[in-house]
Image (cartoon, rainbow, N blue to C red; front, top):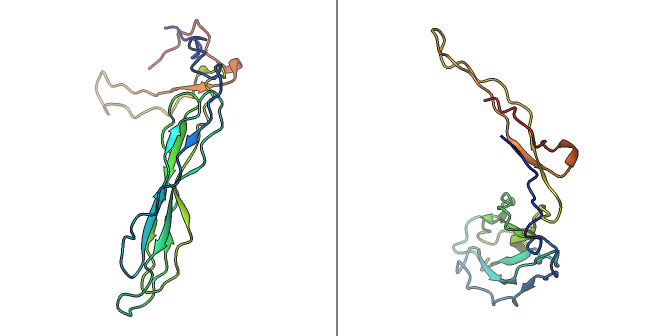
Length: 185
């Protein structure tokens, strides 16, 4: 089997060699209604990405949705509970060349009965993908994994195996050569 560099050099217009297109976002929408009448709730406002940056254009601002606490007044005089923010989730998948990725977080515990409010925070953020399509990339093998256990404890025909995976590198020195035939499974 032959392996070649991942970038063929075709489609240069798509991968950063055309004019840069900057991100364009809409104005902030108005605040939504509060999610509770008392005891603590949240309301949000959002803006949309109108034009995704391309070909090295200016990336979009990180925040596209903002959450703020509202209606903190106690409902029935019980003990105060402070707001607790969640951690950021993992980044989502990247789009095409010069694409963006997103991640989210939320309120784990709303403040209740006069507890400490959450500070205004970003609920969603976007960032440029770390992938740079205009850079040449090359396929390379990871190290072999450990051997699996034998498929049988006795008798003929038992097998065991190990795996290794291809990954993308930017260093041409580690690239697979076109005459690679070592494909043991």
